[in-house]
Length: 99
Image (cartoon, rainbow, N blue to C red; front, side, top):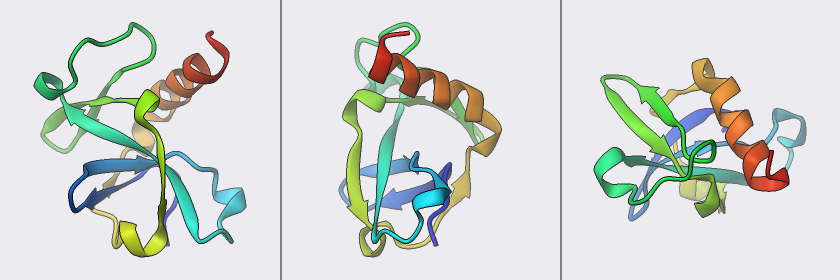
């Protein structure tokens, strides 16, 4: 199972967080957003690329790089960033509506 805000380590892609609502869990895919190390994130856009605390790391959410992966590609979760829900939802709102 891949729930909203679960974090996965995907081979070749690094860490990703599921942003898709649990209400559409019957689908065999999930919309995910990469979590990058601050140094690898490049130029960040205010309001779009928030810092996300995950374990001992502070990573950058990059919603502009969102993708869809199958459940098989995701594998098993390595954690959750549900505690960062508000920042993630604000970033998605910025991406989709500009606000």
